[in-house]
Image (cartoon, rainbow, N blue to C red; front, side, top):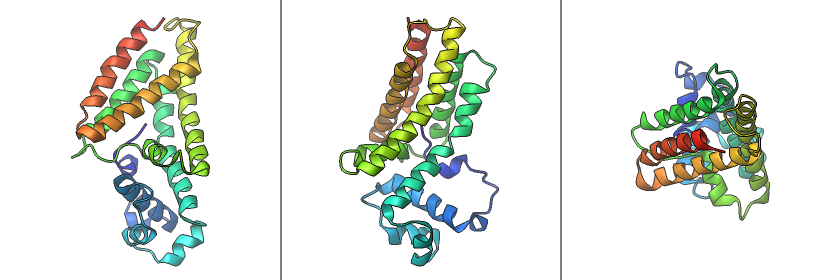
Length: 211
């Protein structure tokens, strides 16, 4: 679940400096977090990129960890309309909705000049889950929200006979999202969207043959 840059999902017609200061800080910070990770990103670097003084940061955030939580939530919330559009509101059959969603996400990555960045949520889970309990818990909550949309879609697929009634909806949803995050990690390693295309081929086959 991810895009190379969160702002690529934003309204590009919005003039950046007209956005609220807090949003400017978060968006600038997300870009840097995607590039350098949590531990490699300094507050001064984030504030310089945002073009705001240090006092503005502490007006909105208690500390760097608090900022990271809000950045993660902001990043995650940008995908909720896409999840709703593809997995809930779409007129396509439920299984087809899921494959179309991932194809759309792959297209976003392939439209970029490079395959760097990956998913902020996945990146920070890799970096911090073992050492920062508050952020690990927050990331888990975000993943459960994403998971709930797939679980809902899978439940509908079961009702329509596309998937077996014995399918564990939550378990399958977790498998799909875990596999996608793995593909995003491999994408960063090989600097190519090929792992995402492979994911799309395989998940389509798996869902079509799922008992």
